[in-house]
Amino acid sequence: MARMKFLCDAERCIDCNACVTACKNEHDVPWGINRRRVITLNDGKPGERSVSMACMHCTDAPCAAVCPVSCFYTTADAVVLHSKDLCIGCGYCFYACPFGAPQYPRIGNFGSRGKMDKCTYCAGGPEPDGTMIQYEKYGNDRLVEGKLPLCAEMCSTKSLLAGDGDIIAQIYKERVVKRGFGSGAWGWMTAYHQGIAV
Amino acid sequence: MSFSAYRAAPTAGHVSGGRKIMMLLAHIRVAVALLTILMALTVSAPTFAQQLNPDGTPNPDASEVNERTLLKEYPRIEGWISIPNETASVLMQPVGRSWDFYHEVLLHWAALAVILGMLLILAIFYLAVGPLRTSAGRSGIRVLRFTTFERFSHWLTATSFVVLAVTGLNITFGKRVLLPLIGPDAFSLVAQYAKFVHDYVSFAFVLGLVLIVSMWMKDNIPRKIDLIWLKEGGGFIPGKHPTAGRFNVGEKLVFWLALGGGVAVAVSGYLLMFPFYVTNIAGMQVAQVVHSVVAVLFVALILGHIYIGTLGMKGAFEAMGTGSVDLNWAKEHHGKWLEDEIAKGRVSQQAASVAPAE
Image (cartoon, rainbow over all chains, first blue to last red; front, side, top):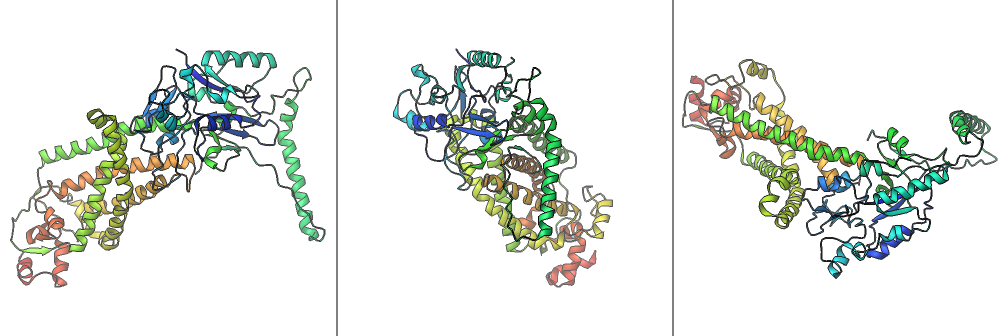
């Protein structure tokens, strides 16, 4: 089995937000919830870089560790998923997540933030594959159809890479060697305890 | 919060200059602007120098932001985001992993040690010393110690505290204790309702705390008599009964710690209940740490309080249970208070006639 990862090549990201739109459309993500987002650093200044960020599907996922009801699980592809039936909307996963991935349908309402929603790596959730209930709760399961996450698939500059960690690391490495520079694989050290040495 | 985060600064606003602005102010502004530019040039001079490769070609990599450098200087990386959600502008906060470590390792073991440690100490104390008794035995004469309203306030605070403690401990320990017993579906249901109960009962606790503090504050101010009480071993030595006012040092300690702890858990708790209304991610993490640490210590304190009020001392529970205590109990544990009550004429004729005979 593969070890699925995301990699955003900040030198290629043009802040077009197509990944965000693709994700919202593919999974019918409700208003106010952003499973993926693009953040621009040093906006309008020399050295400006944009990074597309979502759940990184961490090794030793901190969200899963802190969850008071243990609603998270990791698939054979190392994708971190959760059960919305078990989630109590406490918000702890957001405090633990290094990447701000967990999203909640409500902002307050007496601390009841509703069932958490996050990037599923287009791998659905615990419901049976291809069912409507699966789609409504977690969105499409593309992985089971042999497809990669849509955000990365339709990235116009191929900045956002998804797939087996070793393969996308190799692609990134070749890019850096060829063009001679690269700001590194954002979030990899924090998410996977390893960066990409070029 | 004292944490500063890396945040890409917005582009500098332009300085508008009207023709009829006072000359002096204009001069100052120009001088400040020049100085700023000069300083900026001095500071960024090495950066400009590095923008060329050793062979003279431009290096597009030179001025870019680098994750490793940023994280060395800042606990989190923040940037600009097109959606109106400021929390989403945090690109990365590796501190989340530290908070995970605190929550899953430090808190679990520390809370276990503090709470079980307290129970162990109380058990040892009970086995070694046993319940503290009233030396003179029961007189059969009752003295009013707490009014109905005082008892209502106490039990309002007490029951809500127990509910809050149990539902709170469930958030930390439930998945280790209850989840394996009843399974994930039942446990999630329990945890969901426990969370609602925790949220709503907090208001009852705060109300109880406000009532208690407003009623008993003046009787809990430390006095000279407390030093004597401490010197004489604080009533923990069987057979010895140092005198005390309405509340002794132990009770005063519980009062002030409950007030301090109550304020701390309430403030941090409401921050958690209204996430990100007043603080950012670092503030939320700090609030959770404060809430859990204080809550665990609070539970230990109240365990001690429950012990001395029930098992640990004969005749003590009646005070908060029925509102009145035995005259001999009052004489031995709160002699000064009894004298004052008699002087104020609040004690029955029968009791007053017996009391001075000591």
